[in-house]
Length: 443
Image (cartoon, rainbow, N blue to C red; front, side, top):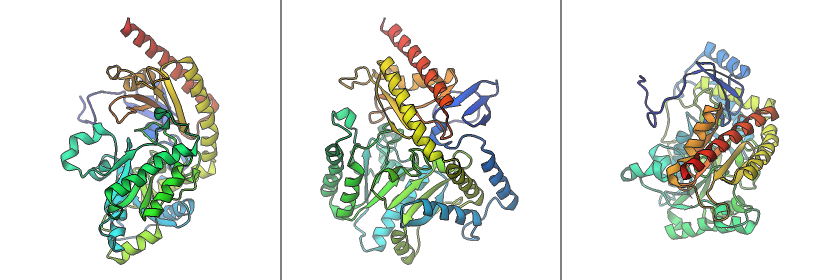
């Protein structure tokens, strides 16, 4: 019997140890972590340099409350992140996770508007589908119905525009006209809501769990930036999943000429070693808020020295091992291998991604893009089959969380060609078994 509970009653083996891209349960079975946990363990498990940095910090102090002390660890990590962020984004606010980082960004956007005489601006537009966190503020900008529906009476839902799913709409994602088509929906939404009421737009540079590694069409991000400037609203880049090298650059938004006003990070920043996240903001937003009385927000573990020491060591590993370049190189190879699986398995209807944030979507018909029957629960069943075979991957419902199925394949950034071979072999075997099960059901 377990005294823990999370989403459901399912039980899993007890974890014994983890090294690099592998994990072992108490029975000695080995698993390849093909999703970096929940797209978290960017530098792999049990990195000795990170563990040593944590040990050094633990020998000095494990906690120093920000109202009582400044800490070297938090200052060093803040300086590092400011140096890696686009010019001007040099103010850092630390948190313990992605939902907290998004909450912080929403509150900063609102307080900036208040501090600059724009108190009528409070709405934050986001996309449907999208995922920005599970706390109530973050959930209000999340477009994933199963997560938000139970809490509707408690939420003040924010306006949504369609995510740029060109592949579902029959549009060419390589054509800037496609990107402009979807970006212009933001301008329409701002006009419909009233420009004087809108504070910000929050966007995942590459879609995460809700859209399955959705890369925006050409021209999308640049047009979004133009629209935000035109209406005087802030652009928030949700880099919780895309940040820390996952897409082949340190930040996902670095792939486009679309500088955000606020960046939120987590997941790969702490890389599974500690709970850690950050909001990185333009100083022009922070200074008026501080002048107006201070940022009315905070968390007990904000800037925790142990977490920041680990985070700094993680970033140094990303730089020292050239893991952004490896993510870019291995990501291209992984996408090519996934497209090879698509040729073999008819159930794969689309392959997409950037760097080592990749996914494939399951469909009953590639031409019509029709999803598999909901009752198959394909997104969960395929993950379970792969897990039994020693491969960990991640999945969600593709279409607003209600139907459709995609599998995220996002191994640690230290992945090698041999690891890719194992991942593809495991997926091939899992897809074959799944196809046999479908055929048996139909029969």
